[in-house]
Image (cartoon, rainbow, N blue to C red):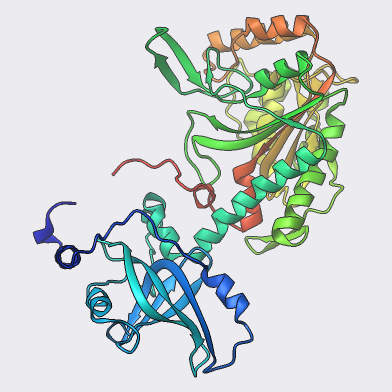
Length: 490
């Protein structure tokens, strides 16, 4: 923004910027040595009575959010809260008063002075010196309406965070969720690892990738859609019996209130257990996080109370579909299943398999009704190329997805560790890819080679951190819980 003539408010602030420099003041200094934050002062002097004096000099810094009585009273906000500043000729010298006249709402300043409480009970600093730390050239939105344009809030998150305490609290709570997850897993002996974000082969999930090009190697690379295959390689190598990664993934898909092209997941792989152990792990992990971050396992989302207290029920996909539609898909062959799904609005192609039909009807008729936490088991084999076959029904696999409020928040398998079966699964995926399925997984020869060295039986779990944070912060959109969501440029 350079056209000052068309922006009179900015022109006024630029003139004040020049005024500061004419006084010999650098309006963007390198540092300020502060002694306290607002919340710490509030706590320390909670018992100070009205009109009480401390005689203690402190140094605070923050952003001006309100100026009253021609600058006599300033509301100064830092990351912890608010403190009032009293700026008066009884305490400020002429140089300080000159600086005061050049301040605006939004400026960042440092203040040195003694702490007192006003007769009205407001904790206050009598300013003896004011230091300009960053002159704001653009005004903040009007105080009482804030940044009400939702799109603008996401595009200019920095302004949103200044104006909206709820936005700050949501992102701070997100940080606590991730910290609690990491702490729990580390306490229980899982090893945190890092795996590549640039892959030579897209894999680990069925999704369309982002493609980039490496100039020096003259080769295409894919932004990670999932870390799964690399994490299981680490189990093959015996790095640890339990590994986890809190990672960013990228999928070239549409946007929605629950989808962003880049998102954060937690993936965990544990040797010598099956998928039932991962059910217990996700329940315990989420309950621990809710207790630490939300002060209990009962939360409210969209006005609905949700009880995250373990254990959570386990229901089969086919059983839930039969309850909702009256159709037992386990009794149908592929042709009949496809016909039943299309009759219910599925619009499946002739190439769609039995499992695709079952999954389609589940998505259409069941998902949205799964409000309280539930583990959905009995996933079809033909949509689960990395999971072990079910011990009792070869059409199914040992896989579950955890649903809360109609959303999938976790996905887990008894991991397939038979290299010959894995190769056959990949080959079936390649056939689907050749038939036009862009999300089918290609054959990863190196991963199959790793399996031939021996992957121990193991359980794997992926948790969608963004969606979990949405639930724990009562946020209606994934954009609320991502600091800088993907947006179309204006």
